[in-house]
Length: 102
Image 1: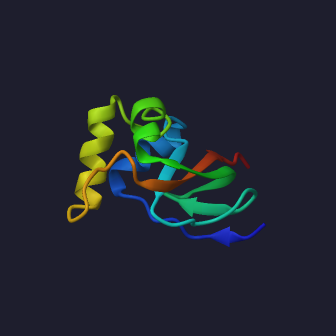
Image 2: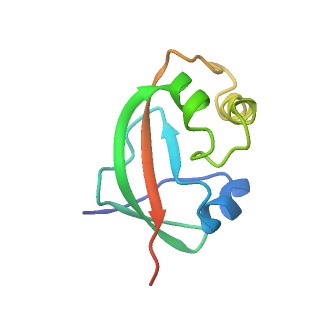
């Protein structure tokens, strides 16, 4: 177990603190099962890290990403990755986590 750094956009503060955002997909692996990170003044624990298609996340795991619908997640992805944009076939690293209560 290691303490790692995973940056998040400020608009994810509320859904992460409330436990509605429990996944983040990244272009590269940011940590492994058991690692912890601090975000928005809270501690989080990585529970699963796996590779998958971005299209799977958008269609089947958008709520875990803290989004109300697939289109919202696509818009967020495009905002973060404006040059490449959304491609459902791209392989990403899914990082699942939960808030650690003191």
